[in-house]
Length: 313
View 1 (cartoon, helix red, strand yellow):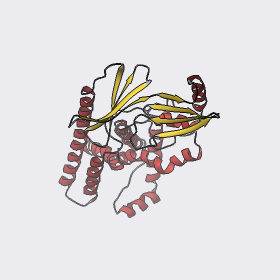
View 2: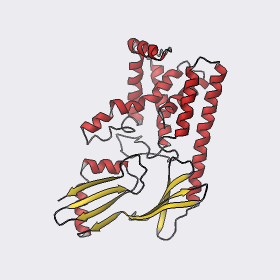
View 3: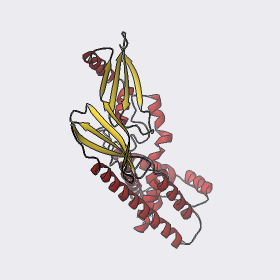
View 4: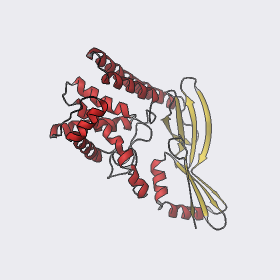
C-alpha cells in the first residue's frame, strides 16, 4: 500500500475515536516504510541478510514495534520536531510516552494489515519464520487509492473548515473499504469462473494493477506442472495462457541436475529468489562442463526480477 494511505488510515481511525494523539498514530503508520532509507543498504552490503529489504524485517510484529518506537522518539526530539514543523509550516508536536508509543505501534499494526492485503505480503512472524503472509487482494500500490489519499492529505494540510476535512476523511475510508470489497469479490469470481480440471488440483488468483484482471495459477498435486493465465472478470476473457514445468532438464540427466540444484539451493541469491517468488521453476542446462540453472517465477508481475541464473560445477 502507498505511503499516504499508511499515514491516513491510523490518523482517521484515531480522529474518529477523538484521540489527541492521532498524529503519533499516523507517524507510526509511515515509520515502517522508512526501511527504504535506513535498512535496505544493509541487505546490499551483506547479501545473506536479504530480509533487510523493503517490506522485510521492519514489516513484522516484533520489529514493527521497535521501528515505530524509534521513529517516534526521533521525531519527538525538540530540535528535529521544530525543524520539521518549520519545513512544512505546521505544528507537528508529538509526545514520547508509554501511551504514545502504544499508539504509534497501533499505526504500525495498521500498516502491517494494509500490506498484508497486497501482493506477495510480508514476513509477519520473522524471526520465527521467513514465510510471507498475504491475502493477495490489492496490487502493491493501487494508483487510484494513492492519488485519492494524496488529495485528502492536501485537504488536511490546508486551512479549510473542519467539516470539509471530516468529509474528505470519511469519503477516503469509504472508497478504501469499497475497493477492498470489490477486489475480494472479483478474486472469488476469477476462481469460480476457472475451476481446476484434469490433473490440476489447486488454483489461486493474484491481483494486478487492473481491478478486474487477475493472474490465475493452477497446479497438479505434486507441483510439477503449472498452468497460468490472465483472466478479466469483466469481459470473461482469458489471455497469456501457458503451461510450465517446475523442472526442465537438457544436456544431462535429471539425477545430475537434482544434485546441482541441491548445491545451488545453498546460495544466498537462490534463497532470496525463492523467498520473493510465488512459484519458482527451474530450467537446468548442462553444457558439458557445468550446470546452468535458470530460476524463474511462474507469476511474473514486473515488480521484481523474474529470473536468476547461477552456474554449478
